[in-house]
Every structure is written in C-alpha cells, then in structure tokens.
Length: 133
Image (cartoon, rainbow, N blue to C red; front, side, top):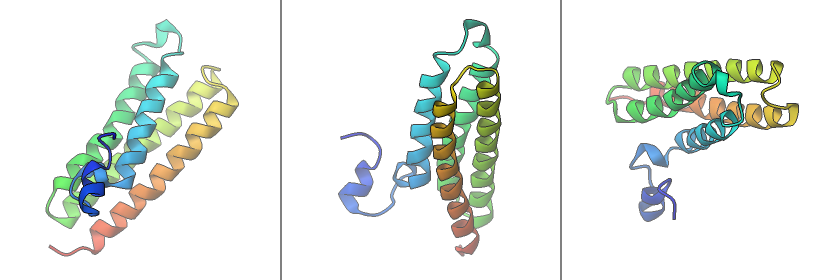
C-alpha cells in the first residue's frame, strides 16, 4: 500500500495532509512533472526543468503546511499560495509545449490533471474560509 491515504483508510477520516485529495492529486502531478522534465534538453536543467519542478513541489508543500495551520485565514492563505504555484506550473507547461519539449497529447493530459488539482484547491480554500476556530 502506498503512503498516500494510509491513515485515511485506517480511520476513514482526514488525519494527515496526505489524506487530502488535493494533496494526492497534486503529488501525482509532481511525479508527472518529474517524468516529463526528464525528457527536456540537458541545457534546460537549470532553466525550465528546475522552474517546473520547484513550482510543482511548492503546490504540495503549501497544501501540507496549510493543513497544519490552525486559523482559517492562515489555512486559506497557504492553499491560495499552492494555487498560485499551480498556475505557475500551468504557464510553464504551456511554454514547454510551445517550444516543443512536450507534445500536444502529453500537454492536454497534464493540463487536464492540473485543472483537477485547481478545483480541489479551490474547494479547500472555500472550506477553510467557512470553518470557525
């Protein structure tokens, strides 16, 4: 069994950031970004490859940090930061497609999955705003 969702399956409730669907889908997106960027030209190692990877990791890192914050405003701020990093990833994927580092089919697939993460993040933001301390 993978690390993702272990606690949720054991207790059927959210106990860890890894139980959040936004984190789970975001984590898969990070893994996909790492796979895709392995195929980028070597000269992009410190350019687009590094930028994409750092922005992708920032998504799940901010979800994790927001999960542990107590106040709804703090939680929402970290989730909004994650959404900002996701938007950065989406922009960089467009660039990668336009310079022909990824093909149209791969771009459409990962772009679709990034939109799913965005929707899940928007749900976390909305939920954080409605929860009182």
